[in-house]
Amino acid sequence: MCFIVDSNGQITTHHIFSQIVKKNARFSDTPTAEQIVRSVIDCARLCQKSQDCKSVNLIRIGKNKLCQLFQTKPLDPRTLDHDIKSQYWERTCQPSFGVTAATSDDITLQIKIVADFGRNIYHLNFNDDFTQGNLHFYDSVPRATNGKHLMVNNAVTIKYQNYPSISLKENGTGWTFCDIDTTPCTVPGSWPKHFEELTGGFSTWALTSNRDDDGVYVFSNDRVIELSTPIGPEWHVVETYNINENVTDNLWRNIPSGIIAASWIPQFGPKRKVFLATRDYYVVFDITSNAVLKRDHLCSP
Image (tube, rainbow, N blue to C red; front, side):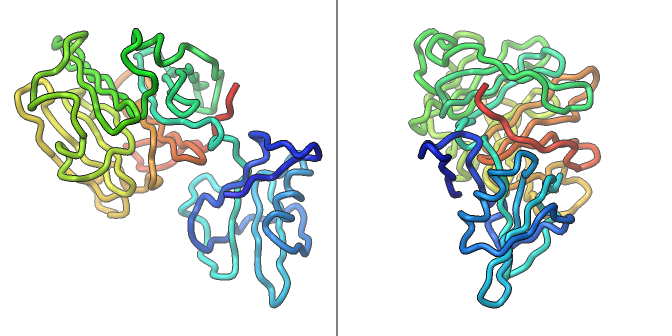
């Protein structure tokens, strides 16, 4: 990632350019402008000066570097072309917003975002076509948790039929807390605990409930681990999905790697659309078609 400073020497949220695919990649759309530059910094500055510029290619041509500006960005970053002479960079403000978690509170087309590096909670509303709607401050983590947590890195609430709800929160220290309604969990084993104890050693990057609300999906870079039956005395791994395996029963195939926040988007009917955030951007993903429907970034309101 590189930070581009403005004329006053200040770093601002809209002056961040991220190499969202950490490999040599090239966007194949038609550029709106091209210019020979000395470095990726110069290329990003050109984009910064153009109000409509959203992304750039930096292409090595002999001893020169060609900067291409685009008013678009790919819906799915996996469609970028592999090119050892190219780099693709995208204009974004999400890294500075510091998203750490997302949860649903069952309000249609609304989810909660934990941001500011785990310190504050925001409401994010979606339009009917899942484009980004309103994003506004809701509460601080200390106030929302009655002083129990100063920050939250992962969070999920599981509500299965008529059973009490189960809430999991990781407070930034690596320890995950579990509550059944307002009472601390007693199974399996003692809490708080390192969640890796339940996932077979996979680190926990993001959490969301499973489709039936009787378990949890754990996102861990390029894996998704399903843990089932948290309402009973034993939590066990039901399935481990590799997001790169293109098999029919892999509902998480085609999602981006590096998911750090996840939440179902409440709608009428069964769960189908899910919000998935990486450090640099988020997608709205449809698990029935295994396709990215929307891609955007979140900026601090």
